[in-house]
Image (cartoon, rainbow, N blue to C red):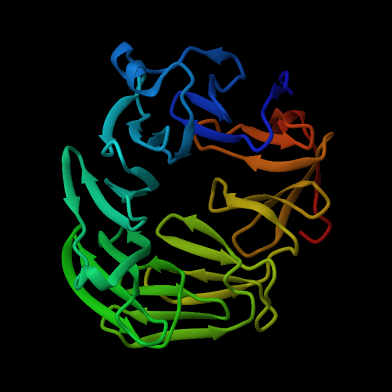
Amino acid sequence: MNEPIQAEEGAQIHFFKNGFAVSGSNTKFYLYNGSEMSLPFKPEDMALVGSSPVINQSTSKYALINSKFVYDTTQIPFKLVYAVEEEGEVFEIREAGDMLLIVSKTQDNFLKPVLIEKDTIYTISLESTDHSHYLDASYDPVTKGFSVLALATDTPYPSVRVFNFINGNSPQGMLSLSDSMFYKIYRTQKSVVLVGIHQLICYNVDGSIKWSINVPNCYIHHYIPLGNDFALYFPKARFSGANTVYVRSNGEKELLELPYGLTDIQPYRSQQLVALDRNGNLVVIGKNGNTIKTYTLDIYPVRLYWSSFAPEGFYILGRDNMLHIYTLNKADSRKDENT
């Protein structure tokens, strides 16, 4: 284990191609071995972000700096790709295949989504936009289908609308769900999975229902991308003896039972998962839900990070706000008795 790095209370860890950043009231940048590196900005960009920039959010290729500037992090120095107007701020960034979704917040607190493809910026047009306010969005890498979940404000009862697009921003249709509320959307090739407080429904793009699950507390869940498929893990819900829904790219579902009490669950290599269990161990889980290996740590972990850019390492934030870098050959591992 390398020397730990002191982090602030509530700090976030962000990974990029050449290293990682520990971001709190300011941000420090490191190589994957834990050595500190200089700020990865050109002099002209330093005039924008300042000498103590803060990374608010990140994806594998992009970082949001100071809530206003989006940078491409696949090269050093980082490259500016988007900046909001002076009065606004960026609410969210999310990769969508070869495109980048940027959701900005307007002065009147409405959310405005735009798509960036290379150097072209597309504004996503929501039909009846004055009465449809952005909630969430999702992208399917197979078909390049894109779906936006919006709150309908011109109906007497709570309801949502789903706007479907193909090839980025070409309209594919709109689904209006009266007297229903959903908060998250996940797109597959020809369907969308909507998550409410007590219900999951998979709708085909044509509006017909493919499948549904009624279960309490399903809004509290972890989304796990798995190539073209994805899984939803429900730490506070059970249904038909399962706590996970594995959704294939064609919209078909499979129910799985993963260990109870997992946190920081995320994709690992070879279609496996990695997480912290309820005892503070690091666990590697197979695609069928079985525990493959358990690693006993010498600290009490509160957050786990793993990056495909540095696949041999685990970055674990301890209760004392120290970030520890582990490699598997230095961890105490044991095989699960049930595998």
